[in-house]
Length: 364
Image (cartoon, rainbow, N blue to C red):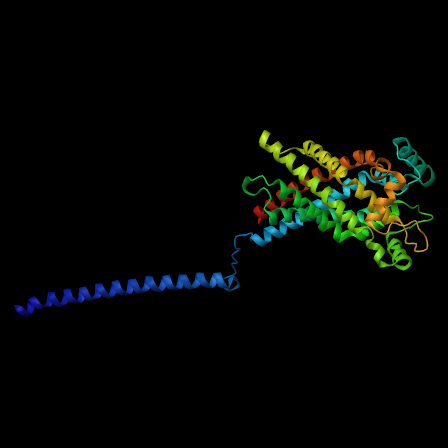
């Protein structure tokens, strides 16, 4: 009887052991399956090409460095386009202004400027009104691109208006430093453009390359930087005032209306900035044009060797109004037009390119 009673115990023990074994096998199987899944997953992440013909595309992520590079590229393109458009529009007025700036024997007036435009058109054709514009484009495209991009970077470095603060001094400084940066990197092109603007195609320079070649051979390489310091001294108030005025007007407009200015409003703000900047720096603009266009002649006395001597010479021979501010009224016409087009075009193209870049990131 006791033996009969022992069998169920054995059966129960076997059953219990089998149950435990089954449970153990199930757990081991699950663990193995999980390990295999993890192994497959890790292999997929490490080497997508090893999977069964399936390639997983990772999500597109934009690093801070890539964002900065995109911003710089967008600023360069926007600035180049803005500068090229603005200078092409006012090229005939610019050439007229330069011709009166460098001459001390002809007083400036609107009638005289119109006569100059008519004579140029009659003697050389309509394209002569844009003479030197190729040199202008060769200069203004890199100049404007560098200036606007440098301004964005200087604003970031100086923490201009960061977190809603109103840093007017830094706003002016950022504009001045942007002007110095761009002018320093493109100055020989500015001198070449001035030389082409004051000569005709028969007795002067035919191409931009010829300008550099003649100056290098006949006047020496240092001539390519004559008037540089006058230009730098002039660009500090010009660029500083221009950027300061434009940024301040945009800021006040946003504070009052809680809305960004449209293209026409930006054009008006740029015009005001251009008028202020031109007025602040105009006497030094006269000095740099005289120094840029006067050929070196050591045997003659009609030279402008330094900034101070040039200022004294202009003052003695022409006075303040007819000397230092000669042609300023023409600048009040062309300056606001050029700066207004430049600033508004830059903002418009930059916003469009930024939106396009964001859309491309979303599509990816």
